[in-house]
Structure formats: C-alpha cells, structure tokens
Amino acid sequence: MTPFETVIGLEVHAQLKTESKIFCACSTEFGKPPNTNTCEVCLGLPGVLPVLNQKAVEFAIKAGLATHCSIAPKSVFARKNYFYPDLPKGYQISQYELPLCQKGYLDIEVEGRTKRVGLTRIHMEEDAGKLVHDYGAPELSHVDLNRAGVPLIEIVSEPDMRSSQEAGAYLKRLREILVYLDICDGNMEEGSFRCDANVSIRPLGQEKFGTRCELKNMNSFRNVEAAIEYEVKRQQALILDGGQVVQETRLWNAEQGVSKPMRSKEEANDYRYFPDPDLLPLLVEASWVEAIGRTQPELGHEKAARFAKAYSIPTYDAEVLTLDRSVAEHWETAVKASKIEPKKLSNLYMTHLLKLQKDLPEALQRITPAIVAEVMQLVEAGQVSLGMAKEILSEVAATGKAVSAIVEERGFVQVSDSGAIETVVDKVLAENPKQLADYRSGKDKLFGFFVGQTMKALGGKANPTVVNDILKKKLS
Image: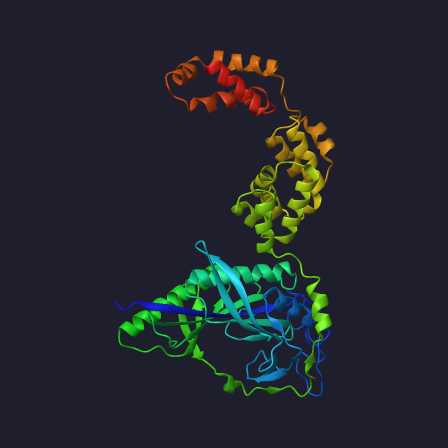
C-alpha cells in the first residue's frame, strides 16, 4: 500500500466581540428575533455608505500581535462578489491583496513535541446572514440578516499540519488566544468561532501538493478531527482504486460521520475582487500598534507555563486552571491571599470549584479568592475538615452567606481531640469483632471500614488525620 502524507491548512472565521457591526451601528447581540439587528447598511439598500468600526480594527491588530504577525501600515478593503440569499448586497466587504496582518505563526504541542504552524494572513471582513430551514414551514428557507455585517477576522494558516491531531491542537491554541484577548467568545456552536479545513494527500516524499478538498460545517474540535480523518481515508481509497480527487467543497455530516459534495471549489478569480470604492485604504500608525501591544494580556499557554514553574504544580493542573482567564486569575489571587500550598488549592479548584461554576456560572463571583483563603485557613488550622470546607463553599455559592454564619448554623466544628476520638475508636473496634479479626488475618482493606465507622459515629466531624493515626496504632 502506497504510504501517503496528509497536508492540512485551516481557515478560521472568528466573530469579534464588538457591540456594533463592522460598518454600521447595529447591535451584534446573539439570539435576537430574526432581522431585528438590521439597518439600511447591513440590508444592502441602495445609496448607503459603510463606516469602519475602529474597535474592530483594534481587535484584529490584537489578534495579529498575539500570533506574531506583521501589521500592515496600509491595508485595503475589497469587494468579494458572489450571489447568495443571505448576502443582500451581492458582495461581501473583505480584504484581499493587502490584508491587515501577515506572516505570523503559532507554536503547538502534539504528543510531547512542539511544532510551529505558519499563518499566511489575518484579514478583516463582514459576516454574511444566515439561512434558517426549520422556522415555520420546513420546506422553505428563511433569511435572517441579524448576523450580516458582524465583524470577522479570517485567520488563514499555511498548509503545515500533517494530522487531525495537529489540526485540533492548532484550533484549541488559536481559540485560547482569542478568548484570552477578550476579542472573541470562541463559541463554536453559535458560529462565532468556525473552521474550514483544506485537506489533501500526496505520496510520501513528494513535494508537489495533491488536489485539495475543503470541509465545512464542523462545529466542534471533535468534528474537525473526525472530518479530516474521514476525508484522508476517502482520498486514499479513491487514489488507490485508480480514481482522482476532485477539487470541491464538502459538507460534514456529524450524525452520519461522512462528508458529502456541496459544490466545486471556487478560485479567487471567481469572486472578481476589486477595491471597495466606498472605503478608503486603512492606514495604521506604528504608534497605535505599539500602544495596543502594551495592553496585551498574558496568554493562557504562557500563564500555564508560569504557574507550573512558579507554584510547583503539575503541568496538567496548570493547563486546567488556565483554560478560563477568570478562573486562572481567581486561583492565583487565592494562592497569594491564603499562603496555602498551591497544590492543595489546585486540587480544590479542579475537584470542587470548577464543578460549582459549571452548575452555577456566578459561583466564583460569590466565592471570592478571599473566601477561598478564609475557608482553607480553617482547614489548615484543623477547625473544619476538607469535606466541611467544600460544603461551606457550596453554600456560599448558593446563598452568598458569610463563612462564619454557615459554620455556626451548620455546626461545622472539626473534632481533633485525640482523647475523644480514641474513645470512639475503641468503641468501634469493640462493636465489630469479626471485621477486626479479618483485618488482623490480612484483609488490609478493612482499614477503610473502621475509618468510615469512626467518622460516622462522630457525625463526620472528626479530623481524618487524627482518626487514621489512632487506628494505625490500635491495629498495629
């Protein structure tokens, strides 16, 4: 069987988190009733003129700087001509020959190695509208133009990826950067971060690229990887059977796990690009780029590397804690406020607080870093157990009550008196002679049984460390 090499390039469209659209003052809010976030400009009515949103340009520059692109001092908006029901003007305002950002790169980690993926360009454009097929009569297509004119950046990679895993790692890193910059919410299901994949194969060692197919309609990282893997197998089978790959656009069907032809792939000349006569060239001063650069935050992967080194926590913990910028800042503030061992706090966040936040999005607003520090200091002082601490934090998240009030109301006082605990341990051992005999005959797992019985007898308030120590002495 002829060995093939996979060649993948990705085109990512990211909606920018501006309050208004790129060329008019209409709202960009998602989920409004169809065709309510519209005006004469985004409806494409005759005689209207676009006015460029400065905040959208700033956000695009932030993306370019974070991905090591050079920012063009002059870029030009062009008209990309095609006719589709959700494109009321009959063209899309985009950038073509002179994009805003060029020649960047991203470093990704796959299977323990670092790989650099080149970026060809990042250019600005407006989004199209949306066709809705399940609104009212399912046999009809309805047009919703709320999304028309929402500002986009299109991020085009070089064909540097060689596997679906590399493509997935690239997308995750890119999404992390945009979300940390707070310029895109990264929601793939709502379409604010969406990807098209160009996939081809070639015999191993051949320099010339094979014929590529473009994959669309992938709304999750898993779907992107699955679609690429399917397409590679499809192309291999086609070539080995004596056929040829046809350059085309294919839609991914996640339910069936297959891609299906949509249309022949367009080339640039099919769009008849020309500079938009209604928009002047975009001139960006170096001083503005430098000022934007000074506001760039520490990115997620940078923060994860720093956490692992500065706080001596495992890489896995650091990566989980930095998936969300607000969580990362919350955790680091709690570490500094409490002086508690960072690993203990990372365990608390990963096993409890992140679950609370998932169920109750405002949980970490109510459970401030100072509250985390207060509760964990009670644990360190032996006044409450870790289990009690988690219950206290859950109640703070649900009610907003003060820690001291919850401790008093619930009677959360950990028993650490060794004399009192030893009395209960003696009683537990006396009441369970069979288990005691089995333990001493070699059934070591019964140790947990005695711990559980002791904790139960003390209403779950016993200090588990003291319980374990006393039992070890009694059973030795």
